[in-house]
Length: 330
Image (tube, rainbow, N blue to C red):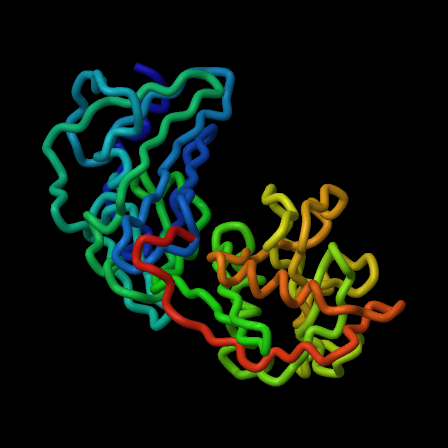
């Protein structure tokens, strides 16, 4: 029996908060939780990955505090009793913005016996579960912070924040027709939030597409109408580069010069595949539907002067935010 197994078998299964004590962490172990997405459509599974990593040159054997060890489970993965190995609490805590919290999973009961877990040197083990099955509060809309402190609180992980809500789309109405935007919540959550915030406030209503580069892009959303304006509050959005390709229908935020973190309110719609723009602008949405692309084609067919200014005003009449189809993924 290893030193770590003996140490855990004698751990008092009492949550840290109740005693106000500082319990030494178990050396060589790293716990982490990772959501499949930080933005979950209302009514969809809340998939969370729980992982334990051995960062040492020696194998580590783990038992669940307060349970009688039994032979290792024949199944590969992190046993459920090890996820909920907090002692009096479950080790998993779900907290809302208002401070309400839950640390006792429903439909789960601590068993008298729990399998021994053996992790090889530099090995890791994990399990992905739908956390709604254990915390029904996650079936409702809201912002939730999830924390994990397994093994009696001795292996704390960083917490994660998830938003559960009906996903949104946007409709840009122009004199040449409508365009529907599908947001990339998982790839660019800050940019999506920024655009939805501005659109909901009516910021884009009455603005124009002030720049048209024939064959390449259409840019708009400037409060001054000339490409020099920013949000009235001066807020900037840091870059969220990802692997999506810049192609026809891709929608990205415009930048000030070479500052990758200068996104504000202006956006552009790409009209063709642009390899040189991949990873240089944050794509936060894409056009969907034949009507949207037909509208883009009509707008792009308008003549522009030598400075890229359309020869006739291309008005953004309104930008409307509405619920996405229920089967849409973030």
